[in-house]
Length: 420
Image 1: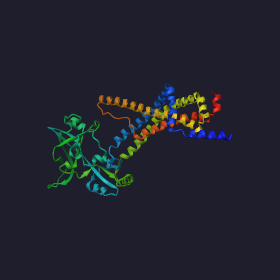
Image 2 (image 1 turned 45 degrees about the vertical axis):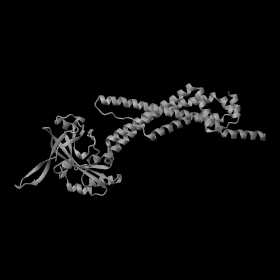
Image 3 (image 1 turned 90 degrees about the horizontal axis):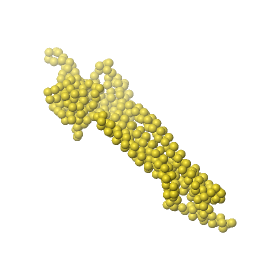
Image 4 (image 1 turned 90 degrees about the vertical axis):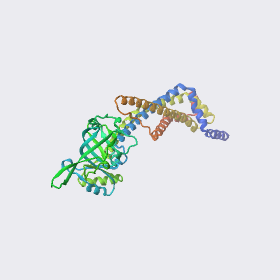
């Protein structure tokens, strides 16, 4: 009896020395013995994983597009737009701009003056709103033009709306970039002349004719043009709004409170971004729920395959137990098989999801070109998300195979012989 126990211990010791390569060979045997069933199981898993990957990637893409439109520059997320209430008809003076720039936490400030004026091109002119800005305006406001002249700086020319181009008879597309125009603005003026009269206003033009470096498609707005203040013969003495950049998030909230206390109306792009982020997160979660539903169906199919595999291999398990295989060996063999199918299903799912996204992007690109718009990438594939999908497929595979593996491990050689 003692010798029998010792022989059993030796056999168990040998079984426990089963290497990873041996486990892989034993687990992959079902791929050769039952290729059709294994392929269909992996395909079902791939469809479930691919659905999750496709839908959540769509959610990431929508979030990226929306937030990219709302916050095109990093500085705009820590900037505030401030102005006096319209009913007060108050202008912001240069001294106020200087005092606000000196507030704690303020890193930069960019004032904007909106003045009526004219735009001239090749003997033609049109009435426009002239927005006089500085070189920091595009960064702090998050301003992005539809068409931009390559290798141009924001303060080297003017940016015009397509409605302003229409007044000058110019094409409302990128072919108008580089055209030379001149702008003039009517400044409010309280200076009294030698006769004791105040004109109430004066006309100030740009120093030289300037190239069009940007075009904005804004069909609903009145014609307007952005002109850098350094390109004007005289800088404005009063402003309508300003953008102030804070050092960080906490400083932004402190600056908001200080400006409200001074009577300004505040608009923060970060508030819009946060609200949009909540909405896109909800959309992504809803899409993920639909994808997980498909994944659950696929995992049930995989569980069924592993259960049938266990039922068909009861006698084989009994033989392995009779020659010394331990519970750990049998459990590892079945779990390795389900793990391999899960990983292969995950890789197939990534390929299917990527292929589906590529096809949709291609179709949307064609549609955008037909409608005169710009193609957009609706699907985003972050590297951590891809790693998560592969991990998820492995976990689903292990979970689907755990119960059959556990039953196989508990099966004794005698019971296997009786149930063959």
